[in-house]
Length: 308
Length: 308
Image 1: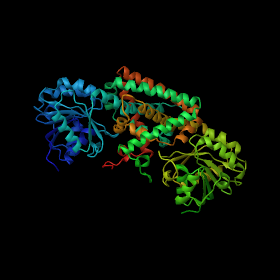
Image 2: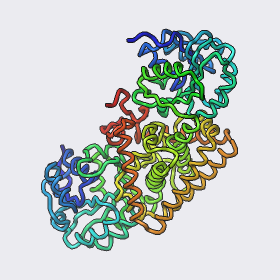
Image 3: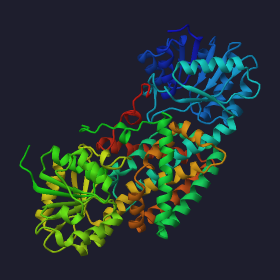
Image 4: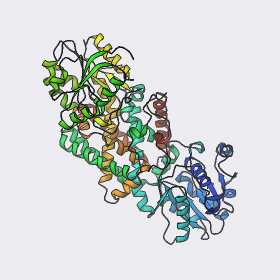
């Protein structure tokens, strides 16, 4: 284990991502101590029980006091108010970051509340599962995953590098881009996929010719994979769509256009064009497996013995 | 191991499903011997190498000769021609079945070519992975999965029960319904999910503001799960959409309507309605896990250590 990179890590919010950071930072000896806080009394009590932080405080202001690294791990819609709350309590020279899935709104909402004496480096670890809450986290969540930084122009390069070293220690790879570009890239690789998963699960739930029990029973034909995605944290995703509205609506427009074209191919029995599209999409899959962003194991390596 | 249910199983087509049936039938001692054939010389040679059949024939007619169970395991669009080819070679009293993902078209295309001396029991095992070909199969594929039978009215109940016993021996659970109802249920639980997965992967591949390398790198945010589904066999899926056109177009219409409504909620910042939908979809997920049709393990139990 190397020398800790930071003295005190303050985590505001200890859900899936926050608690995974706590576990990974401790496992890697990335920080000397961890202070955590959460809005709900229940979560705070659970964090104490889990023992994943050295100290649990009641307020956000207390949590960040004296910390040299502060990471806000809450739904993006709540980040502005939290920045306002902690702004005047931040230690001089502290690095302030977040884990939000939208970045332009984070820069817009948090930036104005942070004093010039701290370094603001917005970040987004592209990793997660469909589970939420402090119990859902695990130290390996970020291994071989990308963490995207979107530092505003003029951010101290040393602060960026120090936060990058922290994330690398947690197993992640770091990429830097503008918050605007981030929001477009994530709209197509994450936000719209989630939206259409939520949508088809909703459509299926509303069908009158098909019973819910049939939808559940025969879900192994593809549907179950969508339900997994559509089981993600509702509050987090509500905030993503409200805060990345423009990019999401733009991508959704393209998706709907393409879907209308596909629908027309089916209506007019254009088997050749269908086959050509379905063959093309296979190639992208290979790229993802080669890049280590998914496993080639059939069916995600679901256990193939009896599952009960 | 129990007494074999059938003397000779003939498999026409030995891809993912056919080769899984061969492996499972042998593992369970469900049949005395297995005869297999495939259209391509390469596949036939591979089946000989794999040793998963007792005999590999060059023609479909030879394969079915004398078999008391014939299962056609090829894309649905090719089933009519194969039925015509094998019709006059089928043994008296044989059970003829298939594994197609569409059932009304199978009844329509195969039925007229089969003599009255055989029992036609169309079937659809709702199981699969994104891989194809004889090497992709495995004996456990059907365990705890449903196999839907859609026997035409008047089919001999004893033949249905005998085929059901075969599938149960392979680990599956059997459900009987009309071919029309099957096609509606599968349109929403399998066909439309595949179609929108193919569609979004196509949309992402066409984006000019986002590079392919970015799509691949940041796919862990949800997109990768769609690419898995969109990596399924192109020929098989082309045939599914062409042969279940009405139900797919009907479901696609509902999906698009719902998506337009969702798009409007985002445009008008209706966070409450978004949250309500996202909360509702979580419940369906729980039903699927409770029914054993997916595992609750985060991220499908993808390995969480380093994956290289």
